[in-house]
Image 1: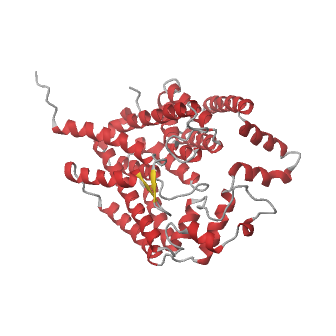
Image 2: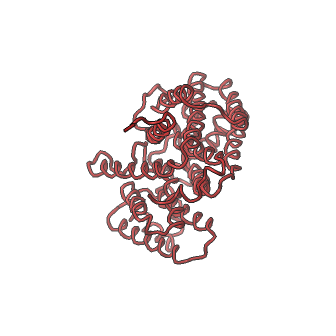
Image 3: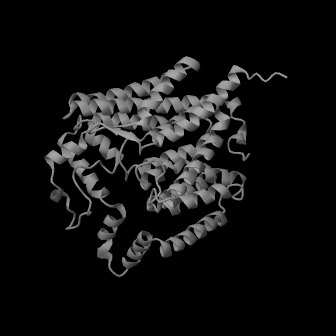
Length: 410
């Protein structure tokens, strides 16, 4: 009996292992090396090694349109480095930007080489992340679950593709098929206590529902009933949720308390956006320099300048990242860098080939962009992995799609 495995099959298995490990690494924020104004994440070392592996074992050729958009993006950020208020910090962040492109195209290549297994691997990874997070919460390693990321709001953004592919599968094959993943999603809400996660789940469900073109209100009613049930449980067992719901109810009798409630829910995000916008207005063309917003704000602004109608978040300081990726890019890279950043997003937006499998990931892309309106860092590696998955799926030849096989339960 011949137990030899063909080289192509070995490569197929290797791609699956690399993909799963890659998903873990792009979510690995809690382990990093602090280099002053720059934190060296594991992914910044890991994916250059992937690049070497792919160059040696796999075909590393890139499509011409991918090369062009990468060049536009990288060149648009270059002036913000050359005119930076801190050259060393900006060079480090520029290197991080280049590695994010490596991550995007590495994931694109892995999807292209082993497309049928990618969806199953994503479900496996997201389930693993929720189980590990739940274990850390139970063991009191984390108070509010956030997997291997910095905080629950980051984890909420990282899970957006999971919400979309779960709802997509549910509409394709029925909600009974997706009961395990729906349980994991509600478990993720419970252990993270993230208000933003509830919002992203709701938006993902509605957009997926609309994308199927089905007018079946029963699905929407079931989902809303389940969400309401969960909120009732959270209201009685979680003080933060109870305070938010009581605050919303209190708006009917005291509408003037809306700003207080907003500050409680979003924290210091609103003021951080105002700080970044002020930095942008002072250096609109080239920005203050990649990665230098915190230091620039600390040297040029005072916290008292950003008090809103006498209200400020208790933990607000001007030396903070912007709580809006688009304002952050504008502040650090100026109009030129902002145009380059938007060009790569528009490039991904235009990908429409193979929409039968691409649809949930395009929805995840749009919801993620909406999420980044209230969160910081354009160097989120798991977001760039999502970009790569979209590029890889859109590049597949029609004969490799195999219809519903991608989302069909095992």
